[in-house]
Length: 284
Image (cartoon, rainbow, N blue to C red; front, side, top):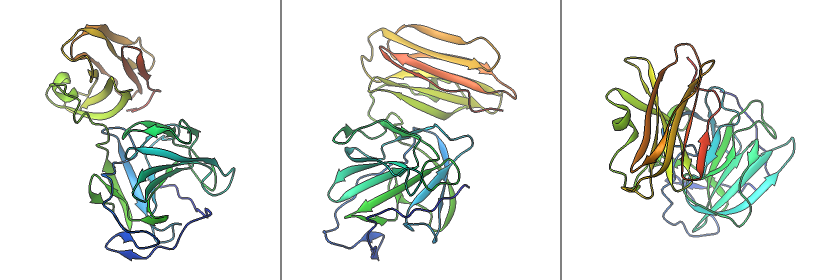
């Protein structure tokens, strides 16, 4: 786990009661915060008493620099700042109402602007190594009335203190209305290992079958369900030709399956004009 030290201005005093901060405002019901990463991604989250603020969470996974960071809950962007080579570096704050905010620091890129409304699971930036950081990771905070509180993900409080593996359920298709899911389309034994949103129109998934060693890419539509419309899914093994399933489909494009022993894969897809292409990743 690569660590960092934060000395950001404006960090308030925390007085903890049952995981909520008591300060200048009245405690209110918190949003249903999700992990700040796309559906099905697994990240190691670390908390430690020497962190500043102590209730922040540092997230890492292998080769994570440049990975997408998404909104943990819907809200309005309240800060997009750059502290240079100190403190948070490039960071974003989202106001979720009722005194609740989230902060995302050490970003390599910021993809939203102040005043912009964002939805849960929307990409807001990319993991980086800016500011007072000693290696690429995401520094994440949940705050109430200006004070950092113990983070919760999908209603469960994070581990304090130590390191824990978390699997994101952020944007996993709940409420999409599609009667199919990625694992069902790819077939028995496949489990989702990564995904990316295609705006509000769909989501592309990468799944893996540990039994036969095959990867599978599939794009699930969230709009125009039951009506044939342009959709695609592709999978490319490093050093080999890309395989693509593209056409007019009612519910999904794919599945596209490939074995990639000892190699990295590039995956992606599209629904109408919304597209996604990964870098080469998920190696091995």
